[in-house]
Length: 263
Image: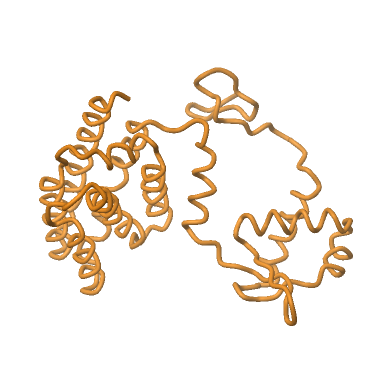
C-alpha cells in the first residue's frame, strides 16, 4: 500500500514521474557502498574538516576492498565535496567541509536536461521565502542589515548600460540569497538558495535579466526597503506579508517578460 502523497519505491514511467526513481532494495555498486562506509567511518571517528584520513593501504585493509574500488570511492567523496586530496610532503586525503554552494551546483545538474519552469521555481519561492523573512524579523544584527543595504546600493540607481543592468538584476537576487543564508532554519535557507541558483542558471531567466527593456527595479526596491524596515523593527507578520507580496510581484513580472521574449 502506498500512503497518500508518497510515491512507490520503483521506477515511475510517464511524464508525471520521470524525475523519480528509487527502486526498493537496489544493490549499490561496490565503490558506492565503500563510499558510504567511509562516511560512517568519518562520523564514528569524529573526524572534522581538515583531519587526515588513513592512508590508502589502511583503507584497503579496513574495508576489504581492491585498490581501484577504494580510489573510485574516494573520488566519489571528493566530487561530493566531503574530502580533498593534497600531494607532496604532508599530503594525503583530508576531510572537507562541503559548502552549500557546492551542494546546490550538484543538485542543479540534476535539472540540466529537464529544467524547471519559472512557475515551478516561484511556487517554491512564494511558499518559503516569506517564512525566512518571518524567522529573521528582529533577529538580525546591525552588521547583517548593513550588508543587505550594501547589496541594495548596487541597484538603487538606473543602470548606465546593459552590462550594469544585468549585474543589478543578479544583485537583486543576491539580496534574497543573503537572507536565505542567514535563516536560522538551515534547511529552509538551503532550499531558498537552491531556487536562486536555479534562476541564475536558467537560460530564460538570464535572457530576461539581460533584456534592455525597462525593468521592475523601482517597485522591487520598494518591497525590499519595506522588508528591511520590518526586519529591523521585528515586525514578523509584516515581514512575512511583504515578502509574500514581493514574490508574487516578481513572479508576475518574470512571467510577463517571458512572454515578450518569445519563449
